[in-house]
Length: 430
Ligand code: GDP
Ligand code: IMO
Ligand code: MG
Image (cartoon, rainbow, N blue to C red; front, top):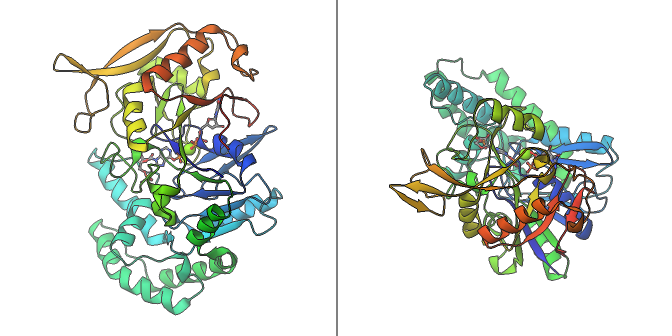
């Protein structure tokens, strides 16, 4: 029995969905533990693509339990839509879905508020560049102890009570931004919509923590799926340019209410280069035509918002911080195929600060760091068909070995294309 956590080791979009889908072959339970529909996880099998925003990436495996943890913030309308898409593909035909009853729900007023705040911040040139999916305001309501939870679905008087408790302030805030506050008719419409969503979702709402604990106790493999990336963590990311949840591996046991002693391994996912969507520090970011050509080569456009992703070189100094904050037992390297034919490869091995080189991304000096690069010879061969290390060019093998030495963490798999099958397994995880 193995309990493993998959965590993004950069600023998100590392290919977590692909890796979780692949590892789901071995497990009967996959658990999303944080964030909400700000995530976009791409699964590809035999040329068919599915992007999951809320449903765990084990969904392509019939019979695998897909659990949405209590630490998530769930937009009921997005979830209803996603369930519909999955069912249209013949997925979720049984009782695979389990929604943690303590999970907080994203309300229309959360999204309204976030939109107004982001617009105002953009005018001031201080935008965070959120996904506008209501994530931050929903976690605010949770911490203020006036959130709407999955267990409240279907209970009209309870929903009306909670809306009443929230809308006074929401109306004042909307007015503060110079907009018309939601009318009574609008609020009734929101509650009607929530009641309709409840009819679909309620049969799947239950005690997710108990279910996960029981699965572990009965000796099953359990896989936790992280969303976002470690550098977007609310406590240990590049604050304030972060999301509002605990994206680190430690967020997984917290979300499901299981003890950290139950976790056996933590697998970090990193691209062979680096991307970031939204604002915030990115020491190895490329500029101009160079960045443009990497974005084009890697297809680096957001799976949720379609925004162009910022592109840069792999940052081993940032990875060292992520290895430490997550206690990574292994790494998965994705998009290695994108390096083919792109010439020499640079890796940031530290930053020059006051004439000295520091080896790990520091907490307080994330802006304006001067990266120190090491350069590696590239390769021209198409490696998307490689299924073992022996089939890789020697320069690709050298690059992988150098990254292992820099991070002190072994790779468990190399990904050479978006499809589940385009993978070189180095160490079995279950
Ligand atoms: P996630 O949010 O971490 O699940 O990642 P996304 O799905 O947002 O973005 C990763 C993108 O890279 C998706 O379009 C994947 O299909 C794609 N992808 C994943 N692994 C590989 C790989 O090894 N090679 C290539 N070329 N694409 C990959
Ligand atoms: P996956 O799971 C990449 C980023 C946003 C923004 C910041 C805050 O697909 O890797 P939020 O809407 O969460 O309040 O936005 O976090 N962000 C992501 N970037 N991948 C994600 O998820 C992200 N989820 C949030 O772009 O910079
Ligand atoms: Mg993504």
